[in-house]
Image (cartoon, rainbow, N blue to C red; front, side):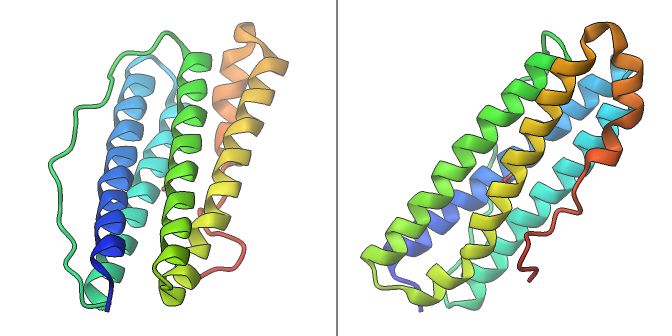
Length: 169
Ligand code: FEO
């Protein structure tokens, strides 16, 4: 059984993962309309992955005797200055999500909830991987420069991880 505090912070994460999915969907749409099909493909896949993250939280809360609440979501930004600015925004958002996951870990310790503490470790690993993937993309962008966006767009899908944290499920 979840304590009220853990149920609340897990439901906050349902909202944040859902928003992540919408944000990347909005970015994907921008990239597709701007003539970057590869970048759009990367972002559509990322959006789907965030939806999977949201569902993991929903199922976990319900399985542990709580009740997951599906929130209304804020409208994400839908215009971006360019590819570089877009991926900088992705990295910033993932850093925010990492901080949010760390707050769940801290709450688990405070509440002596070792089951949730154990369960959330998958997300701790996943966040390390997500931040590092986006950093790699930014490094590559710095290397190719804006004059070679065609190649970058063609190759970006090969930089996608499978969306599984090292430990698996
Ligand atoms: Fe589910 Fe990218 O955080």
